[in-house]
Length: 292
Image 1: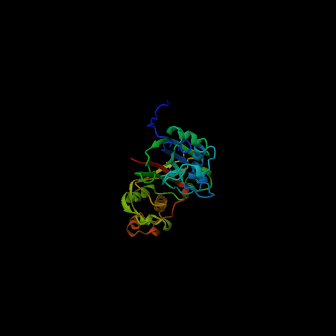
Image 2 (image 1 turned 180 degrees about the vertical axis):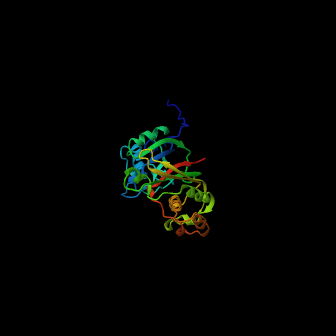
Image 3 (image 1 turned 120 degrees about the horizontal axis):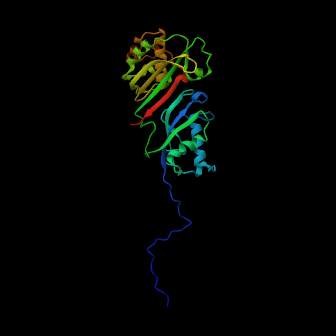
């Protein structure tokens, strides 16, 4: 006699239709340093060498070492595959000591181990200083509380004499009055409308920004003994080319080409033409970014 049929309480699953287990996706943050001399800026651009492009290629080679086609890679809404989002889109020739970037991945590499793994696939002028896991909704741009930039000027009669300084600072033949530059710079500290400190291509509806600190200090290059002037600016946010325009305007004040009162006029009249030149990119460094 056959045994009575007993209905199983375990639901039947067709093994042919089973979906692969979803791996947990994490946000990995990076602190990045780079020499921007040979790059067309941070942001990836077709057929151009950029910092973001190099880092994304390095991460991609770790995540998809077998060359998995793009259409077969897992994708998440609002986060394109292997996009390394940077906090600041630095221009061509600009350097960074503490850029912050982040990407999303399901690879089971320890957060602190990503730095070394990515570095092994990067050119020598880009370094990942550290890596760590961030919260899922971390936004390298939107979560920024403040940033600090440095601008380096060197003074020498022969501006062609030092190859290193030429690609990492702005050469100025005239002696600079640092005290006058420092006095003028203090006019920028606080919350102001910086419309007059943006080039025409970077105009925005909201040009109110807050500068927390601005310093101008003399220094000396330890390698050559050449005199340097170091401008550091810290603020809650910056407009396009704003720091370079500040540096160029302070340099013109230091050379005596325009008076310190030009700062007041640029702020009050919102007139870019009253300031100095836009200082070249090679003297600018992104120093540090804070999120708390």
